[in-house]
Image 1 (cartoon, one colour):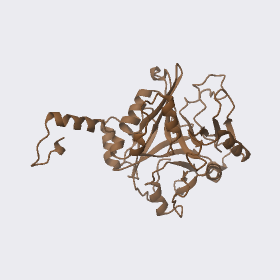
Image 2 (cartoon, helix red, strand yellow):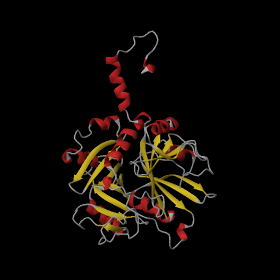
Image 3 (tube, helix red, strand yellow):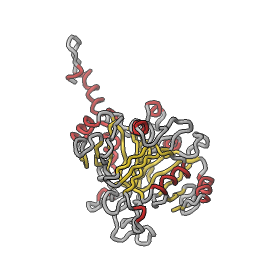
Image 4 (spheres, helix red, strand yellow):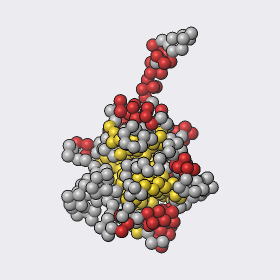
Length: 376
């Protein structure tokens, strides 16, 4: 508030100052620095298989690529763009790098560690096999981790017709639309076995594009702690809360424009207004799944995918003034895997959410010098 006083102007009285102070305290750190959900990172076995899979089946486009031969890995960034959207003419290039770190949308970052494509024993962990499942489940993994990452998703006009096309193209499925109790949704499998949920849009024809990248799902231990981090620290908005009593709750968070905020649900627990709102969004939501009771289990710890077995790596946000944002986050009690000044690259950081999932923070407009590795 001291900064609000300009010599020669009237000082704010307590009554006038308190609302300004309350507003400043309530503004999430991520909102101050325009944090935008920009990526989900998955490790893959073979880019010659995975990149065409997403391009040919879901209309994604390669928007940038980093190759680090001395460190033996490459990064591939794929976006599902709007029709007619201007994209980089050459990949990789300075143009494509600038596009990547200033984009308004969200992409998949596929990480390839050299040699995995020729290793017959190499496979990633999809996040959906674990010891926390009943032993009768085909996904039960004795002595395995506790499940963490769940899936990405694409929204479509017609789930059944889309799945028919995908199946004819050779795409495999974990669940077809009429399998199981939940009818009308499906889970396709990518070449590494990651689950891709196929979800019906709220309205047919809301977008002309056949697909839009619509979700990244993660399981968490403590819903209250996670909500605080993504709402109050990162600045995402909770737009839908769906609860199955005595079982689990799904929370859907998203980065909204000021215009979209005007139409956001007033009651996120009201399925009739909240679910259609989510189904009309182009940009993806962060879906957080909390299985009731895990917050009381001291031994419960989800597996983040960054130690054996590996798979999912992180979600990422591009931000204004990375250094200042990280300082504020640290002052608010957020822990870091990598701070901006650490390591060879100073334009990125990795915060840790309450479950230890990595949250990459990238300076908006950054340029990563060739030969400098990110965290794989």
